[in-house]
Length: 460
Ligand code: SAH
Ligand code: SF4
Ligand code: F3S
Image 1 (spheres, protein in one colour):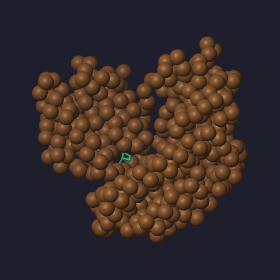
Image 2: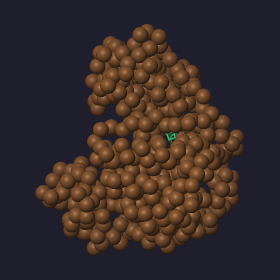
Image 3: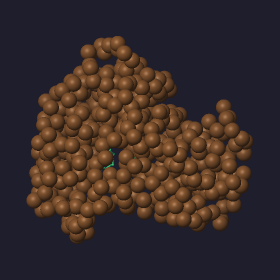
Image 4: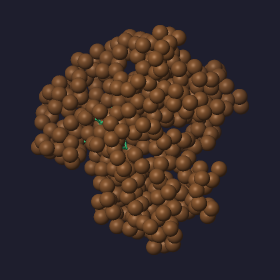
């Protein structure tokens, strides 16, 4: 179906920076442009239109997107007819000043104007550029949806925006107010995905466990078969009941939402994976307070204990910021201790980056670059050791793996992911296909990968 005037069969290449929400947005933009007659082009050099979906979360993330945009714009001289655009969080933050930062940019659409992209690109080809549209950020009633054909594993938005306003974070300013999509819209999207062969659904929200807390998502009188009362456990149960869905993940977590009922849902709802990304940011109560995270280290560890009691095999991953204003060596040591106690399977460590307009940006960025770099390195080394030890503990165990396809490194072997979200490599067998769930016995491990042999198949 062609909904617009793109009869020329123009091709578009989309480059994505940032979080899973941006990956999802890029897929939805791609699907939208395909509905408007475009073809997606994997190879940037061959594309008529290059679109960069941007992230603002740290200074470095913006520098990367700006650098990329400047390179692609400079390359326009060798490619007559090419148009270059930007989308997403950095566009939302910078507005029209993005045209000053990237001279020669043709168009830019903010986080709430992605659906305007086909018309914008048409207008640019009709000679009406450059165009910038950041629209209203107040509240998004629905998200633009759409996925590539043949998706085995898909991201589905359930909570848009963020109202937490952590002191360091730009996301609320570029993603707008928190809004939970009605469960029936989420389920319709999941049903359509599953009918096309999608087997794994990851429900997305910046603080996904706030789903349904601010606006109603379930109809009055809705009864959950397992008698869940909270909105997210109900949604996990309903997604699990969609025929074809075999695995469900949700991200990112927040300790305030790790309730007894969520723990029960993770243990009892078929297909909910044994993994949660639960960003802690710091292990020091003083720093957590200044960050406005809304919990103490003990609250966080209490949430971890609650979940692990219900799901003993749970893998936890986390985000940590080092060098937040005022972070002392003692604060940093508290973070090291908490990370050990929480036994994270993996952690992303970020050096604090002041973001203009956030409360923390007004405080002195007093931890030196050297100290930030050292703390970053120490936490990464700790995490490598911890991750390796946790992986070693899986040797001899059987894990369930969703088969994704041949391993990138060695096409003779197969790759998939465990329920705990680790990459698992195993020898192929004629009877195994992409999308199967198989049992693999782990024989050896690396810091990021488990290797094993096929034991059997639970689903095909
Ligand atoms: N909504 C998610 C996080 C989104 S941003 C959550 O709260 O769980 C992803 C990560 O980037 C955050 O968890 C945090 O660790 C990091 N981050 C955000 N703002 C940052 C900043 N100003 N400087 C450094 N790291 C930052
Ligand atoms: Fe940012 Fe905090 Fe919202 Fe996460 S929860 S997006 S860190 S404001
Ligand atoms: Fe994600 Fe970066 Fe935007 S982390 S929400 S793409 S600012």
